[in-house]
Image (cartoon, rainbow, N blue to C red):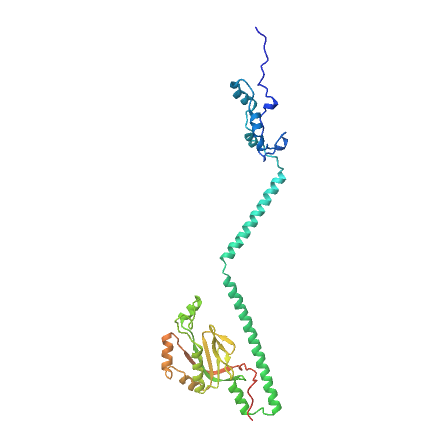
Length: 325
């Protein structure tokens, strides 16, 4: 029996025939390779020469490749184990990601809320607040002016010695510069219900595009003029006394009594003979006027009163008018 002969595991590969080992640049073990640089395109011929096995027996090439090079280098890279991370690093990463998600969600909710909000609502609230503040200031200034006017009248009477002058008192009453009290009538009228609903829904009032008839400054002027013609001695609209320099006009969507804006319902208080004024301003005496109001849905109401108190009107400073001697 022939002695046993040691059989090599595989045919040894010479250094000049060893294949060029390549790994992906993202491999964590690329630094451990002996050579990880890429050859220039000019060395392609040398690469092909180095990859070519110099052997006379081609039948053993497949077996030699399976034994010496059983795994592709790229597949070997895909099986590389990820580097170990500490527990603290893992939880720190989770916490950071959680905080980022919370921040993004919070900012997103604020953005959606801002998109759903109506910017005009805030503007309207700001303007309404400014109007209320200005009205309060105007009321305060009006009260101060009335107080100062009363002091001026008292000083004038004390200096001139005409405290009981009936002519001066009558002139002050006619001009509306003093508060008065007496019997009279109270006339109330308001815009029709359709106009009120239109205003609440945001539609334009009469005078622009709507066809709804509402109470205008001309109506108030006409009613005030009729009251003065029938013996009214003092008149106020919604608490605003009419004086020699008080105007009734329309500005924008509101009616102004002097510089004060009023709105429906409108209450006209007139001091005078209550029976005469009630008869003159009733539906019988002003039938055509009441009929036109009725067609528009406006129904004036007149009531008698035994005691009406009207405060003094706001008067401006006279600059150009002088007493004729």
